[in-house]
Image 1 (cartoon, one colour):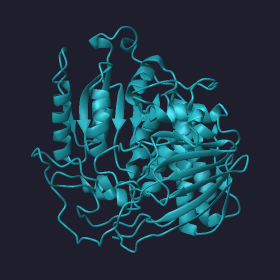
Image 2: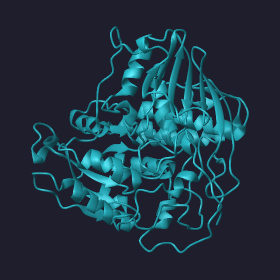
Image 3: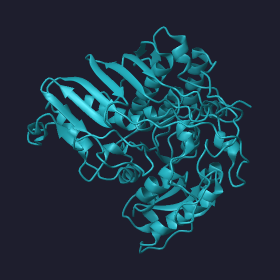
Length: 479
């Protein structure tokens, strides 16, 4: 057994391309849409959903957004920790307590494969650690389910390419939880993007992104695996590592006497399971930046960065960092923990700033650097005048509702796979730049580094045992 973060994969570029092509080839048959989903919002027309992942983001964000909607009814919840799965059922029941229609009986599962086998479930939400995203999402696609998946889209770039292709081939509706595209009620991100893309600040020259960092701590010793947790399946494709609560998620009770699903889990701070805040909040801010730059389906051409990495084996994600990326048109993006948490678009005629302000996704998010800027601000208040805006995005005050509506209409949601993959890719490239500590050249069309075998090897990772999204894609292709 090893406790170190996964090393760059030994897989060759040729092997990776062959695996990706194999995965895409099998995912070609369009899925049938249940006819009952079309028409009025009668009970029989509600979208039947299963929640996979009953932790912090699931119960605080995805459950209310989906279970709380009249467009959906939740038939099942699932978590590898049965204590959390049971608490997920109680959460759904509480959300349903105000409904005036008959509430379905909510089944509880520990193995998501059993949930996906149910033909009466149309769609799933996936609220899991980053390293589990791609494999579970691919399984859901092949089971004919539409998907709402938390960001970041995938753990590795190779998984992102594969999953993007799988979504396109299967015709499923997939929405990534980049909810800044729907952030309400003021929708400052949408409005800021509209202003920038309407030329309000002149030619865009620079973009600044500020992200917080997670603290580290000494490694805790091994502990017995909780009886309610399927730890082997939790590790999934990552290297074997001893169990400690510090690595996974809290096992204590919250103030309500139920399992603690509000504290920040340890997996967010270990590179086997997350790359740190560069993908954590970075997936949100890079997505908003690409949106404002009108570069949602491309990427940078040059990346250079540096970052501090703790020597601890468990909480080992990056600390302080500074990254510079160059995009088409010689637009320079600076990403740093020294900048306030948000996105600043800088042009010839001033700047426009967008952020969440004092709001956070959950109460356990890291504290952002203080700033006097408003959630939507500018170098000159006149730049924010909506009169004369020529670029208009689709308004939405609910990211989950947008997904549910698209499941019914089969329209493209606000944060689809191709866009989410490119935002996540920029985050992953930034992490690779921090790791290598040298300037990198990226071919955004071919999606590979130019003349850098070491950096290209870091676009994917080994997959342990029977687990892994690329391995699963091969399995489907061989049928």
